[in-house]
Amino acid sequence: MAYSILGLIGIVLTLMTVRLVVLLGRFRVTKTYTSGLKAPSVSVCIPARNETHAMTQCLERVLESDYEKLEIVVYDDSSSDDTSILIKSFARAGVRFVPGDGLPEGWLGKNYALETLAREASGAYVIFMDVDTHITPTTISRLVSYIVTEDLIMTSVIPGRNDVWRGSVLMGHLRYFWEVLLSRSNAPATSSALWMIKRHTLLDTLGGFAAHKNEVEPEEHIAAIVGMKSYHCLVDGSFLGVTYEKRWKSQVETSKRLLLPIFGGKWYGACLGVILLVLLNIPLLFVLSGLFVGWYSLQLAALCLLGASMLMYAIFTYHTWHRNWWIGGLFWPVVIVQELILMVRSIWGYARHTVTWKGRPVDASPIRSDRFEIEE
Image (tube, rainbow, N blue to C red):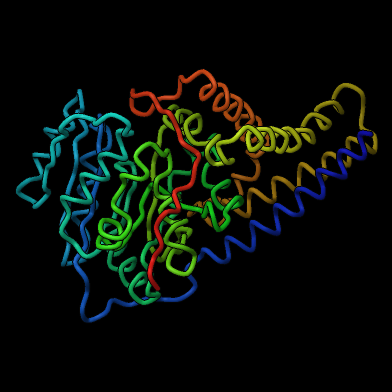
């Protein structure tokens, strides 16, 4: 029985690794894009709520951008700290402050902030960007070049990591790992850290965020409507220079909010997610048993599977960590145990209606919005 389980795990790991390699290769930018002569106007829209720890650095990095046709709009969602003061201090640099005006019934706070920002923006394209996302001076110009050259409506960027030796990275959650691995046409891989879309399409064709007002990942639902021909997900590399920094505690709350929706938001998706995570943890259990019962063929087979799973994760960190990517593989045994705990917490939180987002309750809707069609 034990050997049959290990055989099943081996098949699952093989399928996961092959799929991961194929999708990471598809999401990676493999050629250089240069700016066109007629560069479109771009609005960088940043929703913020109690972000004093990251607000200044975020805005300073955006202001360093070499893209000329750029406006920066920041929405303060009723912050209780000094976030609004920090935003206003950048007014002379051209940052436009939009104060929160209360949250309408049925809306998630961030979704309403995105809706307000989209309607306040004036650019041909809108870039939605989290406060804990960092960019380089050339990020926006290169991203615009990519989306214009590829004739896309929307793109999003899975950010990389520079601060590898921090505990929040070594013990980070697997959100973007699952985004890539579970990507499919009706639920494409997306990133809320930084994504870009034609403003006319978002507001006039899709009606803004009204149809996605209570969805935990509105960008995913919008990407599914836009379709794979007009939407690309990118994994950050040296070309784009998109990174992020997020505290471990914030990552835990993010996982609690996102893991169940990532696995479909339904009971059967939750069951499959738990089964998958249990299977991925079994090799570690057999390896640890070798410390007490001795090393036999079963423990050695489990050790080989554990090494294979570490290699699989190292393939992911190779594409998303800008340095020392091999360390990610070494921490896989601990990270996958943590992920199983976070998955159970996510299921339990939604079952008990205790999931929150910036202090507000979340009532996630897993239903895909597909009432709109994008004209080719």
